[in-house]
Image 1 (tube, rainbow, N blue to C red):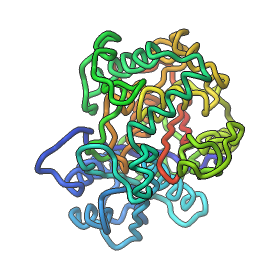
Image 2 (cartoon, rainbow, N blue to C red):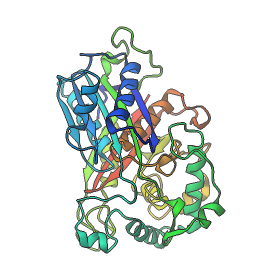
Image 3 (tube, one colour):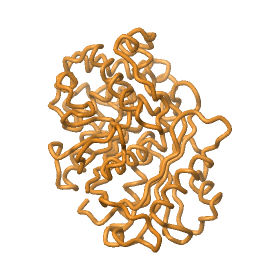
Image 4 (cartoon, rainbow, N blue to C red):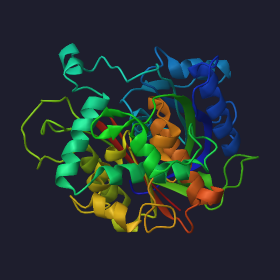
Length: 388
């Protein structure tokens, strides 16, 4: 993406469990905050895109109806965990095409308790542990342990790092640090994954206001002055190529070939090209950590390290706050939990605040370029690059 789109405002409803609150309630909270920050009122945006997977019919319309902000196109977007990233891509593309000047993007979700269930999978796949289940995540983790020198200690240290980061994030579900010993003493869910190594599906909402870059500096009357300005350098969604059994795509869908690029690699490659940047230019990353092994696999697929080197990356300390390339300074999904439709936009909110220097004790000093990454079933992988 060759510039032209800026972030005018962001807003969040914390991630967690909120009895008595609906997806509409949480969506209103996030949208209201983003619009207030952008100085946008009724008639101030020309379209809205809402990411949700479990919200039901017209989720976005319900949120904006509650606020009396209907009349423009309102489009619900579903791409699993990447729903918010897909919505952001569509919104940015519409602005770049000259269709709109200002667009609202938000995601809201209230996940059922327990493991993620999805009509995407056939019953036999769930029974065999080849759906979005801890058993499948564990198979993938076992493969990573074989190919990348990763041990259970590495997995535990990813959890410790993310929980430490999350302790400084008021929007996270878990705000308490843990230790390697506590992680490894939590019960085994499916070898090698212990309970603390898995994220919690939960509830929450996030919103972003995008505006044409040439309008972003002045903005409407009364808009919040944002310094430094944050540019959306790329927003990409890619689907899978049928390939290895343990890919993010439909299990058993293709060839037993590890050489087939993952949707995350496809999306990252396209995003780097559009932004005119590469992994070496990044200052921080928010990536998919559905489980501890997924973060390490994400690092390899995004080109943050060489294939097979994610264990060594943990050993180097590079991905912790204060390291060369902090990963998941928000605490990631392991601290925040994951409300699918809001997940990707929650990452974007974090990164915008990081690039503005607003994150207090979890601030990455001097951050100028940041990447967000989500993987949703289908398989859909979203990569967003932000810069200032």
